[in-house]
Image 1: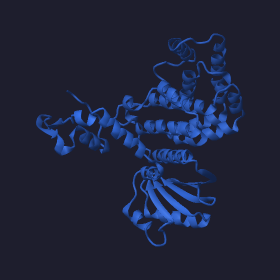
Image 2: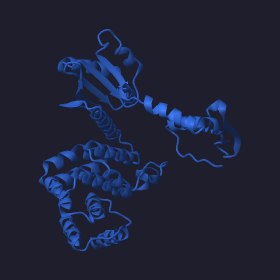
Image 3: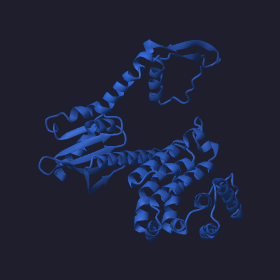
Image 4: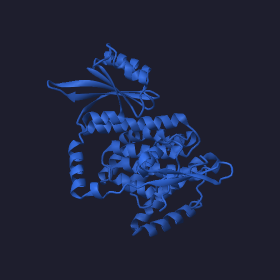
Length: 376
């Protein structure tokens, strides 16, 4: 069926599509032609893949469509579908494109294949999401609150030129998709680790640090080596990124690898959390000035200089008189009895509680927080 779909879409090239409405009409006609209900994708992999190719492919050049005919690419999508693990596409997508000759053909017509792969993959996740029954998604989350429209994603990807930024955007979307599925800790951990890896690499690239070919990856961590310009030559730094909390065992493993790779320093970087025992360990005599630990935000703070911006912002606030005219807002929140649902009191967030922005800060840090609405 895939080859027939490619032929049918490629045959439309003689009559260019003029606008989004016309494209939608063509997509619906093709879906019906191949036996699909436009509003109800089939639940099996073959159907989801073919449905995705129609939705995505209308208006695309034939070399791009042929990319998704390849058996290896279809196998990767099947594996991701059957295991409900989009991280598989993150690992294999770039490798397939680099190794596949059609990737070069796509570049010859002025189109980069990686954004196309990522866009197709996001279409695929969106169609897959539509096939899941209510029992298969988390009951207290609305899909529309998390999933962005595919057209929005395409526009976002179109602004990226760097492959790491494209893969990072896809990883974020995959993470949003995964949040709506039955618990799959392994897949979620892989995606979070990939996001941290891409963020760290992007930051080092922005700082113009060279990244060596050395790369090690485990279930919950990854390692790379960077070269930082020094007074004479450069310093080699081993970086170990961990998806969850950085723990004492990570310090031990990092120190061992630093000695093996003979780097000057080792940096342990966690997305958000570092255990107290870990911070104590890096200050022990054997590790001090060799092993360092940071959250990703702390890593950014090592080199990011916001002083000039903050000075400008403060001067601008004073110039416009915002510091004199700003009126902090209080807010109230009704409290209800959990059984009767009757109102039993009111919480007031004023100067003593940081005003409305203080409440919002706490709300954003609450993992159980869901919806927030403001009424005048």
